[in-house]
Each structure stands twice: as C-alpha cells, then as structure tokens.
Amino acid sequence: MSVFNIYNKEEHLRRALDLLSSSNKSEHVYACLELRFCIEAIVYQKLLHGIDELPNTIVETWQPNKALKMLVEFDRLTATDCSIEVNLSNSIEPPKDGWLLLGQQKLPPVRWLNKSYNKLGNFLHLVEPKKVGSSNSKSIKESVLEIAEQLEEYVKGNIVINFRGLSLSRCPLCEQDIAFSLQNLRNGDICKCSNYNCGALLKVTVNEQSQEINLSCDIFDIECQRCHSEIAIHESTIRKLETFKCSSCCAEYIPKGTYEFALIE
Image 1 (tube, rainbow, N blue to C red):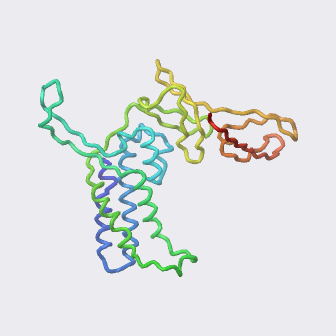
Image 2 (tube, rainbow, N blue to C red):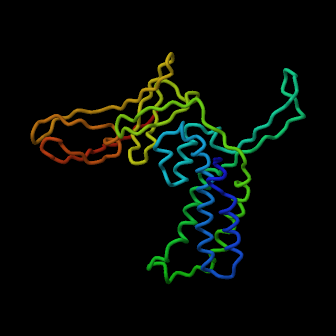
Image 3 (cartoon, rainbow, N blue to C red):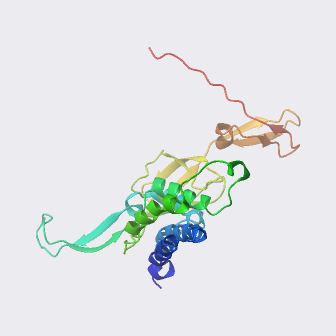
C-alpha cells in the first residue's frame, strides 16, 4: 500500500480547516490536533518509504520534529523540498526547454516544523494555573490559521525520495544504530550520536575499500579513591560534567571543568 494512503495528510488538513471555520471555540482545539496529525503524516510518509534504510533511532521516534532533524543531519538533499523532472532530448548538454515534471517532494524546514508542532501542542492542554490571570486576547483560531495555510503547500508533495548510499554503524556507548551518508563523511570526522538520550561525540574511521564505518570514543581510566578499583569514564561524561560511580564500591564522583583564557599575540 502506498505511503500516501497510509498517512493521508490532505484529509487531516481538510478536517482542521473545517473545524477552524466553526464558531465553536472547542472545535478549534481539535483543529490543532488535526494539524499536528497533518505534520506527522508528512514526516511519517518519508520514514515509511525509507524504513529499510533508516536506523531504529529515527523510525521509532514518534516526534516528527526530532525525526526530520535527524534525517536532515545525514542527507540534507533527500530530506528537503525538491522536484523531479525528465527530458526526452538526446543532446549531450542539458537542454533549457522541454522538461516534464514528474512530481515534487514537499518537506517543511526543521526549524518551522519544530516551532509549529510545539505551538499546536500548547493548545492541547489546559491553561496552567500561573497563566490563568494573564491577558491573552488572541484566539486559538488566529494563532494557528497561519500554520494551516502554510501546510497547504506541504501537502501538495506527491513523491517521496528514498535514501540511498547510507551506511549503518552502532554507537559504542548506547548501542543504537546510526545512519551516515558516505558522500558526506570523511575519515577522522567527529559526529554526534543521533540518539537524543546518548548524544556521545564519536570519531569516524572509514575503510575506503569496504566502505565500512567504525565509530569509537575516548575512554579515561582512573583509580577509585575509596576502593582503588579501576573506573572507565566515557569522554561524553567528562564533557557534560555528569556524575559517575565506581562499579565496585558505588562511590560517586563528579568531574570538574577548569576554563582559562589567553591573549592571542
């Protein structure tokens, strides 16, 4: 079954616009829910189409703003707006005329998607007690109508471009799969784990012959001041100044960062 049938973005947008045209303010709240469904459908069409190529850290992410951000990070070309055109000319040089449009992929920018998705979500909750007395004359309809109008452009997308040339490697810390575009990756690059619960900084080693990618991270060994056992600390723990414990005696430690500055002559 087509991804366009499974996630019907046009239907969610149509229902949202119908609800916003109502004079009943309660229906405007449900319009926000339908608009969020529309955004999810746009992103999930992309995920479902490339599900065999994408890592679980992206496919299993239910928040479309985070999922799209991860897609853009490793392949910006296939995760943004683009058009597919063909030309029947036999000339060596690309012709100027005679191009036939096959279709367009329409994906919103990550920044807009994140802002709009969160804004719509704010209207799906009751007003917090501390904000009850604050004056807010702007209605829900006025606040989200612009988002609905902008989504009309993104639901026009009628093709989804699949990801190709991806390589999967496993994070040595959280053991989650991470996807990379071999065209954008170089030996010695430093990347960040796409798992938001990890976020470790990893060094990339590319085998040019096999095109395999290996990830590694620095680990520091220190001696426990209580039981003198060896403690292995990942670099990400030091960078984030997170607490860690000795696996033998459970003594707890916290890193300390010393920052200095110097004048450049």
